[in-house]
Length: 160
Image (cartoon, rainbow, N blue to C red; front, side):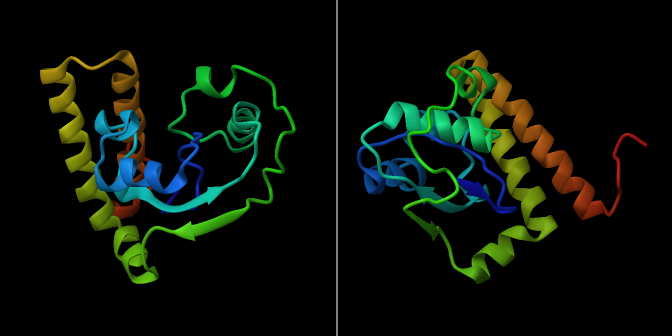
């Protein structure tokens, strides 16, 4: 999955892509969606590869793309296996129209949405006592918010 900036955001494996995407984006009941690791607002495109070697292929993708929502322990657990050509997906598609992508890319809209997402995550951490992974994910979304704020405010570095 690639974000609005075409940066690799998340990689995983599934035996049924359509069902998994519904779980992530429609029902939002996958583990990565329900506890906030994946912010559906940010994801613009999906690429997929077909293989019988799903575990090895996933490691190839994690090693080559280094998606920022996959934690280091997930992406460094095995060396790349060469199970797939990561530069040539079997397919890609946009999750929204170009107009919707343009709307979501506007700094004002990105900041507002990211604040709302972080707010939901904070509530989940407080009331559902989520895992350390959820807490780590909150920092990743904070990093994204800071980038969005820099763009919105037109400043290079918020620390100065």
